[in-house]
Image (cartoon, rainbow over all chains, first blue to last red; front, side, top):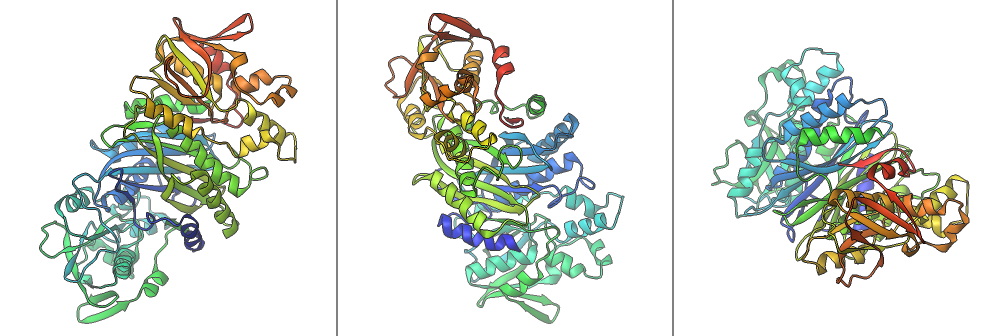
Length: 307
Length: 307
């Protein structure tokens, strides 16, 4: 993926300590900040997605990054670029979706609206770190447990159904078009912990998150496939295990936290000595190195990477 | 301009108090935040603009919004979307330009990079409000003076030269492609004042800023054309007065502050009783209502509006 190459150049030029996690943590301001874009024809198609869903998902994608840092999502700005044929209805529905995703505790406070050839959305989200411990991908420790929140694989299954021409709004399609960030789960962990911990959302798939945490923390995550929560209708797909493990855009959360923490979610594994991810299917263990996972990463659309 | 219509719908849906100034002021977090986008073919052409200049200008446009709020610009995130033919050189030069615009006190801390049909840049900037009084367009008071920083009309003249095929990098063209935000001026005002004041950048032209401040504050601004600072080479254009008054993208600052404030810049007028802008050309006075100014607004490219 070309974007991955670009990112290492950018990191070199900027020489910044902030770049790496889902959000940048700015302790002097007491905030985290993140920005994520959705581009028509790259990340979504208006053939499948309503303006309401686009507004909804654009917000959720960014809120998910904030909550997976452990911060409390508060404010958003939204840049929306639109071709000239787009009418007011589109903009209104988009913002109704955005507002619905914000709920009562998050507010859109600014942004801009411009012309463009295609629909382009870029959202910036800010969370408060007050009274919270912020996560880092590097902070998984031996003896910690691996906890997840949300169902895994549904969004990728929904995308597959959409691409196959499915017209019924299945639960999978809904999971793809209107994903729900695990706001309460992430928010509670950030509020409850004073020890270091690791947390990420599963925007690029569950295994992607597990592998990044394992490799950046220098530990082995032992994970039981049978414990991973997924919609049982997924078994209709021959490769349902791949959907669960590598399907992106579920916006679930993976947290690697001290054993004793009572945080809800589902415990799917533990941190061990070693490096990478050991995936247990019953009695069988499959080891995934960083490279193994990168090779298998499931990319619905084209490349999209955070810096 | 269609975007203007959209904005009133958006404001209705969001029903937010934050929307209105160049930045949203978030007192609970002690920050201001702004987001501004530049779209290829709408706001810039790569025929005229180097990747370095695009990175530089994208940053300056946003930093200008932060300093014109009176806050201290600190951090940026950058979303960059690129067609697949774009090479690594482009990305590196873009970020070198962005870094140059940041100087030593502002840092890029995140963002994303994605595919797209055209080059699209959306920057989010955050400023600290600590020890600062934040401006509002509504805060011009009778008895205050009107102060500006920066030269007016140069950027619009530069754009005109570029469109006419000028190949030499004139000062005007440089002003258009590599505008400099009035960082020190804005920052000092925010730091020095404890009274209410109004401040805006001149991204959409000097008269646009004067008119918005006058009308939102419910006052008359009396302004002397002869006091307005501009590059004297501008007089080569028959309509140089229009360039000075209505040309956009200079990213100068207009501040309407108490008479006694020692803030640098150039005093171009005073606040009087009444509504709108009285422009004095020697002995002649031309009155501009809100509608007069909106009719004359100089839009280089297509519509672009902040919410």
